[in-house]
Length: 312
Image (cartoon, rainbow, N blue to C red):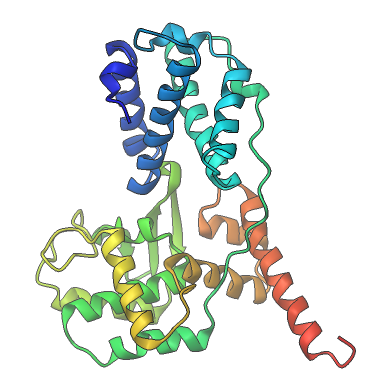
């Protein structure tokens, strides 16, 4: 990848960096998502400059004159030459649309080519949940240990399973975000939106036991979950812990933080909770996202029917 100094001029680079700051601090995008968005837009800069056969760095004027055909050519190249999956192409388009919209709003521009571009069709990916037996198997070794790290892992895993938080939301919790009396969490989710999530008494107890022995606990503004060396626990470290546990126990590779989140949604759905309530608890901006869990559960019901029904 070329350096951005040769791709975009100083003015556009300043806007590009400001957009990244906005994504990180205003939209509260995860490090993983932010890295992907930056990579996608940089990839487009390289393509656009070559496609237009420009000898100078791209500037705001270049993007103002952006045409639909150019964006479609970029997506086609990524699909045909790089063999990118529809989900990757959809994200790439979303990345570029986000940056372009940021520029439109800042400079009050009128021409938004992305109003006329639809993303590639994607197959409906069904989230996979975690069976209760697998969950019990997962936390059983942690329940037998007394180190603060083990108590932290137990608190975190039961929190994910029992509240449906995203891993990024869980590790960004502050000590003041949990109300032990009302058994509620204040969660800052995507788009910096805040929601209140109820917490089961057993989970509150696990968190209390962890906090009592963790050597790094601070005030209400301090992180709730700490890494082994005293810094805030990262998503990568939490995921590595889960991978290590499931492999030691011979549990399926599908047992991920997102699978724990899906299981929470499934339990609520099977218990008769309204989809709108589940949407609010999960922090979904769109009901259609929540409905994927309903589709996944229906597929499971149909599979059980076919396997167990005498005429299936």
